Length: 146
Image (cartoon, rainbow, N blue to C red):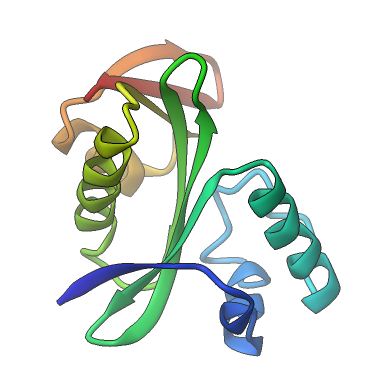
């Protein structure tokens, strides 16, 4: 069973920080060259809260396996979604659960971007029937009305 739970300070664990410093997990992230520690993660967590973005921990079988964030633009009724998951097969389900939450908040459009080499994320966007918004030599950006 997959669940999204509000990300809290309790989720700022050594395990979580190790994901952010894992070169394989982060190889397509814009943060791949960053070094993360507790203080840096706590600052990021606080910024997400202050800006009223949605930050969820992804749980699979009661185990924290990733995170999903919706960067909210309430005025334009849209959200940009970012995900990091350590468990194969949880990304699509997490997106679908987040979309249900976003609809309840009157968000009607989602966006996601990824590196052109990130085949798993591109497949996820296609399975969600997202359309290509723009593409450059390194990245592709998707959009969907929800």
